[in-house]
Image (cartoon, rainbow, N blue to C red; front, top):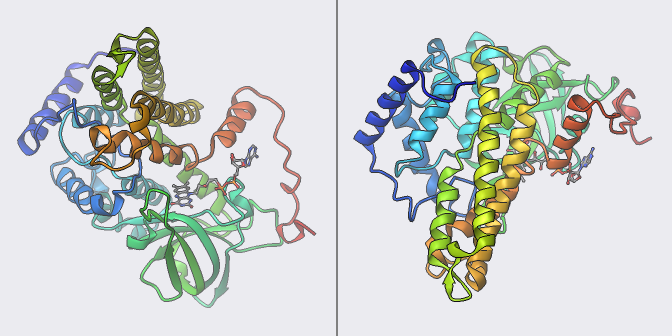
Length: 410
Ligand SMILES: Cc1cc2nc3c(=O)[nH]c(=O)nc-3n(C[C@H](O)[C@H](O)[C@H](O)COP(=O)(O)OP(=O)(O)OC[C@H]3O[C@@H](n4cnc5c(N)ncnc54)[C@H](O)[C@@H]3O)c2cc1C
């Protein structure tokens, strides 16, 4: 693979840089290096993130790899990556988590949606509409196919009852993607159906969960006789698992393509300003070795992700790169931010922006870093994927895989 820009890629990069310079100031990399883990500032940051997404969209940079007929630029995933690299040089809001979900919903509707459902895509790409992902339940996270929310057919509607949890952004969402059980007489993966849900419908109760950061990014969501028209079903009845798997793979891809260089630059600056044994930390051999190791691993993830993007832009389905990229990146961010807290000595334990170095950005990014190790598949689940599908190891034990769902636990 050639990592230099082709003439076309260089032209795109120049166009992106010119536009960014016309709407934003360069980022001061000495003080600004947040990479946008979900943090305690979430609700305050949301309006600015939304406005920035709308601005990018209107300029042709907000939906780069989506086709023009659904409101995208009709560009490539590689161009998207190039734009992200350029964007990281400017003082603009970081890419919001809601856009990961929004993009996932758009990819899904493009592939499986009816014309009426596809009509929601442009407003979603522009972030005029916010979506949430109603998958996980109290007893169905990693084992998502074990979910118990029921959808029963009643005339032209489905009547839904049950509970979801960890639903990010549900409190502000206009629409949701939902997976529910429509047949309990067949094995768990086979009796599921996928829907889109108008979150303003009667029968939906959202309860924000207070997190340790003080924010409430995610919610419990309860359905009490929620009615969903059959026109809002996505894919065939009983085919919901296949649709959900495609959605989750998109989520992993988006987590894996985070731009980490600002964070590494921030750690270098921090090491220049803090001391170990009366000398700048940056002069300490062990500190330098750790930072070098972050650079090397960041490069490893970046190149792995580029293989994935190359496959995507050739219209192929990426292979294990997604799982490896997501797993490595999530762990690397947590390790880097923990290292930054260690460098701050006792101040590392201070959350207040008024007292902690760099307005406590490392602290909030560290709190946020655990999220990517869970969302879109936990580390252990991803390792199972690598073990089974890449290394060909024996399968995890799944005693209920072929059993009718209504017999599980009896
Ligand atoms: C911040 C945040 C935001 C989220 N947002 C959303 C959202 O918007 N929508 C949504 O639907 N969900 C969301 N989730 C839920 C997320 O997808 C789940 O947390 C995740 O799938 C894990 O499920 P669980 O929490 O039920 O843990 P469990 O599945 O109960 O896992 C508990 C532990 O057991 C391990 N484990 C489980 N199964 C295996 C196995 N077979 N082999 C080895 N180890 C195993 C796990 O790795 C984990 O360490 C969010 C989660 C977080 C933390």
